[in-house]
Length: 255
Image 1 (tube, rainbow, N blue to C red):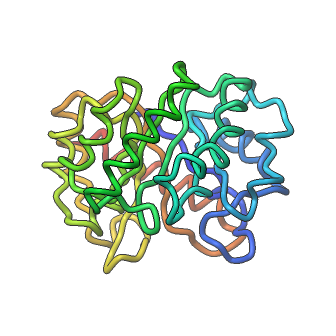
Image 2 (image 1 turned 90 degrees about the vertical axis):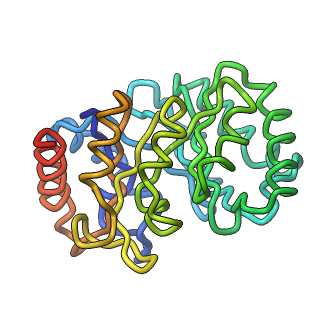
């Protein structure tokens, strides 16, 4: 199980947000993942941290980063080509400069692709934008059914999926169908539990991790898993993640 973590979960929450860039402690998190035996960090870019993000200022090629999560483009204009150029160009340029092979684009909330016309326009424009970055992999994190997701990722051989277990639990809880339909396109699995639409501590919500892991193993999934779990008490991040890591690794191996 190649297990990593989303950036920020090994640091105290910033301004009480569950997911925000940890400016003061981001370098410490890379030390922590080595101590904990985690394989990678999924780099985070949020709307409030966008302009000051170290991605645009630091040399990051020596850090264990598997992808850049572009939370800053969860936006009602995501299908617009001008918006994509204004908000993804600098990210993509710096991904290449820092030897980061992929970026992750969330397709949920304001960026939902449920609407057929919006999805068609997005597919057209994200492919047009992708022409400028042939070497990069684009990972799409959908809260969407698998057939509509296939519309997007099958439009380009360099388009893949970040499968968020919490998103799919909240969406329709049809994990087996999602995995079987998209398994050849899944390159990252966000491990998250949800109950009534809210992220909760793992194994306390409605996410059927036994079904998910059995299905992924059956389909011979070999790529990344990334912890994006609910937070615990501030100041206890290291021990909490250590405990959660051990639980998931032992549970995964037992199935």
